Length: 92
Image (tube, rainbow, N blue to C red; front, side, top):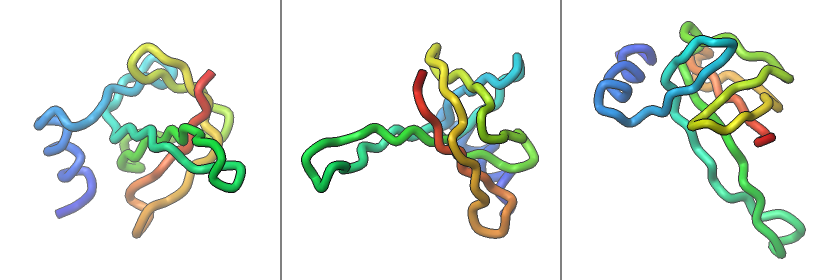
């Protein structure tokens, strides 16, 4: 099974979140896990979206909107064989 088929199945099951980029909306796996910082004395939220590379092209500095909140892309990296991407986001 390819990555696009997997994401389409997840979207159809309601497991993905709508993400708007430059007026276009795609569905991505949105995560907001807490990350321990300052030697364990504080938590910081680390926003991320995962998506098929063929669905979306993002670059550092791009703006995205998720659930009415604006984010700036901090980093984009390939996952696995490169057919999937992960973008790290900073909430504005």
